Length: 216
Image (cartoon, rainbow, N blue to C red; front, side, top):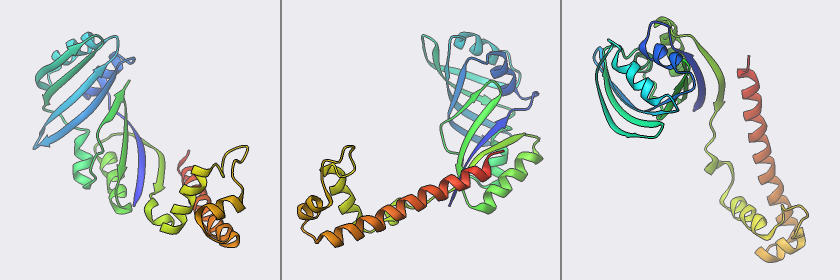
């Protein structure tokens, strides 16, 4: 299933955009966010020298209907709030794409990582455009179940090779030594390692190629 990283630009009229752009050096990390009809509830961490100023700005926002500071320390705070304008949550809800928490907001930019079907990602893009939220695709990757990438025999042999120092520089274990260590023929050891290495390298290159396509 595809995994994507998106960078969203919070519209100027949204309180999150105003607050984070007023304090660009401060990070807001969204730990939880739940839409409730036309309102939303969120739990965030505020981290930076301007934490107190950010709290003051949030308290002055009409779209924030309640705010509760749960923890407050030097340059950080844990805050629960309710908002009458949960715009960022609406595209995810409309597309059926689950947001992966936490995600960060800094200087009007939101970073999302999502895992969803191709159709869901397409609907998410449509929803973002419908709600007037500009976005940039950093990458799209086709996730591989790494447990299925190698056979159990290949994984066991690779583990033994790493433990023995076969892949160290300089190499601390020869192919013959490795074969003797695991009790198989040298030719079998060589072919099993080669097939495992082939699968790993091809998987790596495939991911890099997909990254290149996603870059502007």
